[in-house]
Structure formats: structure tokens, C-alpha cells
Length: 231
Image 1 (cartoon, one colour):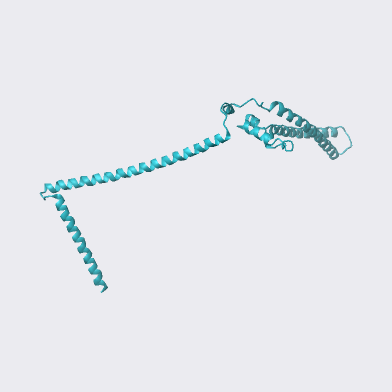
Image 2 (cartoon, rainbow, N blue to C red):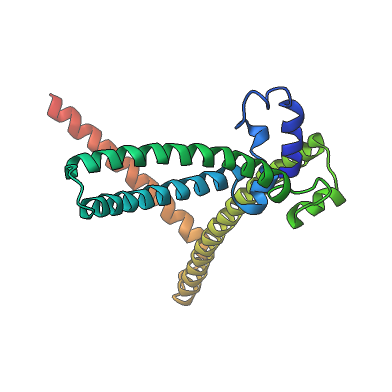
């Protein structure tokens, strides 16, 4: 995919590449994917290492020069020797940095053209399937959209299945309660018949009628009590 992206960006930004050295098309995305760094980063590290080493070496050379000139028996004060040595060291450092900068630009161009460049006909292993099975961008987008729809449908099916299982469990609990009630009714009927009390259903109907009459009587008593309190 980086090879395709790099080609697209080079085509779009060909006119701007000369004006902006570090634009996206000049970052060598495919080379960066392979080497895990950009050529510019490599050269920056080389230049930083050279600058640190140069400063360290020039500081040592400056100390040695001041020490040797002081031992030679000259009448020049040590502070003046240090000042002159520091000025010479600064000029030498500027000269060497300027020369190395010119050399580093040539090295960078050479590395980018000869070392850190992958030929157009070379593909990384992870990009070879894209060459064998090329897909249009629109087709890929449609496949991704279809995959997202399928994922949402699957989640909806899972939620519906969980709801059905919860409802089924609730129905099992209700069924168990009904079975318990039926078992209690059967046991009551058996006990009623055993005691010789006649038809259980007729007796149960009479009991329910008596209970309703009792409830009406209780309600009438409550109403009468409230009326008495109001008076």
C-alpha cells in the first residue's frame, strides 16, 4: 500500500517537489517502510555525530596547543594564547563544517539514488498480494461498508438471541410456578376426597362465595365506621 500511496503522491505533487524538499512525495514512503527510517533522518544522524565528534576533538586540540605554546617559553600571556587558540579553533570548525555540509549533500544525493531507493519493480512481501489481486478503491470501500453492515447485523442478532433466551428463562420460571400450583391443587383435592367432604370443586365454589360475602360485609363495616366518625 505504501508503494501505491507513494506513486499517487508523486504524481499529484510533482510540481511542488522542487520547491519543497521535505514535502510528502520526497519522504520516500516505500523506502521508509522497508528501512524503518528516511534517508534525511540517516544523514541528519551522521551530521550530528560528526558535529559532536568535531567539537570534542577541536576542544582537545585547543588545550594541547595552549599547553605546548606555554611550555615553549614565549612571553605571550596564557589568556591571550587561549583567546587566539579559541579563535583559530572556531575558524577551523566553521571551515570543516562548511566542507562537510557540502560533502553531506553529495552523500545524501548518492544514498538516495543508489542505496536507499527500492526499484519500481520490487515489492515488499506484504505488498505482493496487492499486485496479484488488484482492487479498485471503490470496490474496497464497498467491501468495507458491507463488512460493517454485516458486523452490525451480527450484533443485532446476538442482542435478539440474548433477549429470546432471557424470555425463555422467564417462561420456564412461570411454568415451574404453574406446575407447583397444579400439584398443590391435586394434593388438596386428594385430601378433600379422603376426608369425605364431597365434591371439591363444588365445595371450593361455595367457599369462594362465602369469602366474597365476607369481603362485602367487611367493606360495609368499614364504610359505616367512617360515616360514624364523620358525624
